[in-house]
Structures are given as C-alpha cells and as structure tokens.
Image (spheres, rainbow, N blue to C red):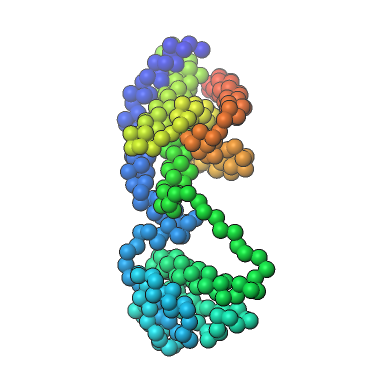
Length: 356
C-alpha cells in the first residue's frame, strides 16, 4: 500500500468535507451543545438532582393549609417564597384544581409529643414543572419540621442520624458535575461517532454516484482509496477534540489530562471509523449501512458501559487528574483491537474489489 497515494485521497476528502452535510451539521450540533450548555445544565441537572431547580426560581408560591394549628406553620413563616393560606380541605383541593394555589397540605391534629407518627398529606399538580420547584421548597420546610419533632421526641430515639457537611455550594457542585461528568465526555466522544458515520457516507457515495471505476482507473488501488477516506475521518477526531478542550480552557475550565484524553479519543475514534468502513464496504448503500452502524454502536456502547473504566468514566478521571497510569493499560487493548480491525479492513477491501 502506497502511503503517498493514501495521503492524496485523504487530502482530497478533507478539502471536500465542506460539501458533506454530515460533518457540517455535526459541527453545528457540537457548537449548539457548547453554546447552550447552561440551558442543558438546568434540564439535565434536574433529572438527577431536583434540588437544583430551587435556585432558578424567585417567585412566590401560594400553599393551601388545611388542618390543626401546628409548629409547621412557623416553618412556613421562615420561607419567604411560600405564602400560606388557611383553608378547609375542600377549598384547598378546589383551589389547587383551578391553579389558584400550587400545593395543598393537610396536617392532622396530632400533637408533636404524641406516641403515634404525624402523617402529613401533600397534594401537587401532576406532571408539572412548577410542582417540581414547589416540591423542593416544601422539602426544606418539612425537613425543618422533622428536625423540630426529633428534638421533641429525642428521649425515644435509639440512634441519631449522622450529619454530613460537604465543602462548597450546591450550585458549584452541580456545575462541576455537569462540566466534567457530561459536557467534556460528550464533546470529546461525539467527534469519534460523527467521523465513523462520515466514513460510511464517503465510501457508499462512491458506489451510489458510480465514481468508483473512475477513481480506480488511476494508480490508486481500492484499499488505498478506502484507507484515504478512513485517514481523512480519523484526522478530524483529534482536531475537533483538541479545539473543544482548548475552548474550555479559554473559558476557565481546567482539563488536566488533555493530551491523554485526545489520545484515547483518537484511538476509540479510529476503532469506530474502521467498524463504519467495514459496514459500508459490505452494504454499499448509505441508508442500510447507517442503520446497521447505529444499531452496532448502541450494542457496543451498552457493552462498554458495563466495564468500570469505560470511556466516559476514563475521560472524567483524566480531566480531573485522578486516573493514574492505569489508563495506559486501558489504551493497549483498544489499540490492539484497532490494529486488528485495520488489518481486517484491508483484507476485506481487497476481497471486495477482486470479487467485482
């Protein structure tokens, strides 16, 4: 195989990438993710940490209170953004249905020092974002009431909960979880997936546009043509990953193991690109090849995620400099599998061309 001819094919494909809708839309998608990461952070954080919603709301919410006088009323008085209305139970439920209030609380007349537990009933509007915000705010009120009950009933407690104090604010914790746990792996791994999908387009278009015979009529062999397209797609992975890590650094987000991250992304990207090339050579039709590749990608992703040191976790650990030298041991089997796929791609390309 002639490296110079492979390089010429790769150069031709790189210069023609601006006409490829796949890569153009993919880059726009990554720009969208990076530009609107703050909005994504709000929604995605709320999925695993509803408490984060509390900081995004400054409105006052009406709460219908039905039942006996209770120290819980004093807890509501300490919350500035919850406005309490004393109502009968039927009035409270009717007001909730009409959305004149955002929640209804029913409190029994059980005294704080009673033997039996105090059962408080809370009604919220079903499947509503507003209910999620109010639920978080009510949680603080009810936890304050719970602490007061623990003090009143302290003589009956056999054990006490252990209080944990974590450094830093909740907002800072959510920010770093989003940046290092989601945004960095997403921006680094997405170019690998996109390049693998792109190589399918580059190979199948030669068959669909019937330009393959013209290309092969030059001194370039069929395997060299395939490897030129693979090389063009593989180059994009480290370039895009490096640019994203650089832009994160410009915005004050420190990524410790940037070089190792780019190396792992490049190896994993080439692995996926070779899988895409093999699928494209077998099906020779874009729609079928992309469908099979997408299915294979899901299977590979599910399998890899069962491994403790999977790519997502590894990139996060590298970004915060906690991976240690073990990541080099993880890279070795990936490189070995990639070399094997490269050999298989070359052999299969020769067989495809010889079979006509």
